[in-house]
Image (cartoon, rainbow, N blue to C red; front, side):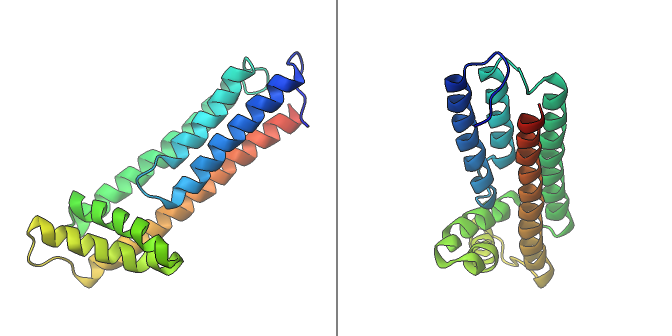
Length: 171
């Protein structure tokens, strides 16, 4: 068990377990596109700081974690918007791809990352009334963008959790 100076061990273990649970939910939610994964991991770290009166997780560490979280969310959003504009997709295409990925996850990783997003985006664009729904480039962007964004968010999420654990052990 990790002990922190001037903090009772029961409070520390309860706060740590709650923090770890929140961060685990954030890490798992990375593969579900409409859940705020990186902000949930940030929230777990922040709650740990609040629960321990910022004994180990100090303002400098929170600034670092906040910058990582903000940069990841900002880049994820801007690359999605850039891709939509470049390949003439719409907001409804992205919503369809996200829901298709979620429903496709029932059939495994291939369904979640390939079949579901393509099928979902095509169906939502057709429901919106577009005749010429997607070309091959748009489908490729949807798949590559979704998988690439997931890999980046997962890497940053693991890095945030790793930095947090390192701070606890060395702090």
